[in-house]
Image (tube, rainbow, N blue to C red):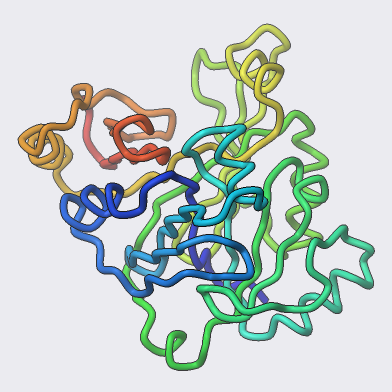
Length: 276
């Protein structure tokens, strides 16, 4: 069973520089900071409600993470799902013949971890993590991410695969006016994983998927109570944000700290229940 998103992993060249934003400006608490020699990375976990953001800095050349950073630049690397029994989950996935990178768990920053191959999840690298009991008890219970997005070319197939592999169901579909796309929402804890797909072959979403392929978007959305105050706070710290404007989700207003400013992971601020 996967009860929440444990974290999203972001590959970047300098974790200390990124901490100046995620810890010092956003105010997130560091829960772990160590070098994982087996993977050749320094990993830093920062808590945001029930979720975490993991900063991954390669410390050795010619590793998978180092090659990923070299080819794609700073960006989202993986989505990690939390489980209380990783052995049972891996056995279930093997019986389903899901393509795994790890057939047995290994030690990671989040506890016992294993990865599902991206080709099994429509281009998304998915990590499974079973944290130590002490971490499970201590993890935050407040809302962290409002949503994160995955772009898919095969919407029907992606829905079926997330249901089969992760037990997540699309419970709501949104068709934003004038955007020729569908947003399929899958609850995972207090976060929505959204499948974004084109509904017209010449739409901006169709062109985006054609250019980039199926993948997880390098963005997390965070719900705020007063978006104007949050935008002003980040602007006063030197960041450039657009004025709040209507979002793709109903009854929402958003503004975004770009991925270029936020070390590869765009931070969308979203407020529900007001107009721009």
